[in-house]
Amino acid sequence: MAEDANRYTRVEAQNARAWDSMARGGAPLARPANDEDFANPLGTIDPLRWLGHSIAGWRVLCLAAGGGRQSALYAAAGADVTVLDLSRDMLAQDSEVARERNLSLGIVEGTMTDLTMFAPGDFDLVVHPVSTCYVPDIARVYGQVARVTRGGGLYVSQHKSPTSLQVPTKIKAADYVLKETYYRTIPLPPVDEPSRLREPGAVEYLHRWEQLIGGMCRAGFVVEDLIEPMHAKPDAEPGTFAHRAQFVAPYIRIKARRVGPERTLIW
Image (cartoon, rainbow, N blue to C red; front, side, top):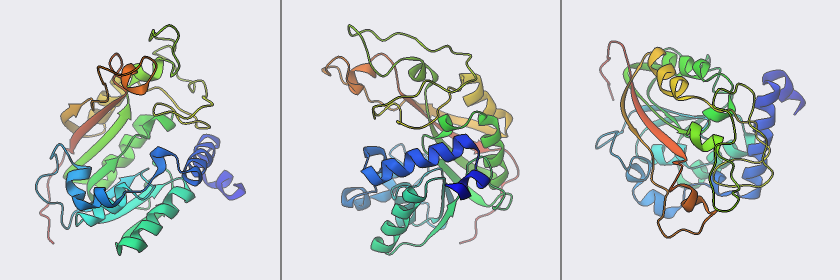
C-alpha cells in the first residue's frame, strides 16, 4: 500500500484495505451479480422504475461501486458504463464478471472525492451505492458528482441513515438506543464484527440530514424522490438486522436531477 499512501489520504487507504479484505473473503456486500440478477438486469438495478423503460446508450458512472454487481448489471441493461472504486480487489471482480459475461466496462481505480479524470457533464447518470459514510466531507463528493453529471442528468444514491449510525449494532435487553452524538465530526467508533450495518476495518462518518439532502441541493441537484428501503420483518428475532429495522430504517435512497440546460442524447 506504499503507492496508495501517495495517492490517497490515510482514511481512504484504510478503507481500500477494508474492502479488499471483504472482497477476498466473499463478504455478502462484496459479491458479484448472479444469474438471477442478470435475468432482468434493469429490473434488478431499478425496481422503482426511476430510470424509465430503457437506459440503452446512457453514459453511466458507477461511483464507489466496485464488486462486479452494479457495473455489470447496468452494462447488461445496455448502458455505456464506467466504474470507479478505491478497492483493487473489488474492481478485479468487475473485470472478471465483464470477461465472463462479455460486457464492456471502463474500470478506474480512484476516490469519489476526485473525479477530475472525467470531463464536465460526462455522464447521463451517476449511480452511487452506500459509500458516502467513508468520507468526512460529503459536500466535496456532491460537488464532484455535480461537475460530471450533465444538465438534466440523474444522480441515484443510497446512504446509511444518520439515526442508524447513532444506534449500536449490538443491543442489550432488546433496546435500541441513540448512543453516538448527532453533531459529531470525528469518525464513528470502529467495529470488529461484520454486519449489514457497519464494515469491520473501515473508517466511517455520520452525515446529518442537512448534509445529505441540503448538501445535494446546494451542489446543484433537485431531489425528485426519496425512499427508505424496507428491511423490517414483523416476526424477526430481537437483535437481528430485520428486527432492528422495525425501529431504525438503515438506509435512504435518493433520486436527484442535475440543474442546468439539458442536452439531447444521441445514440
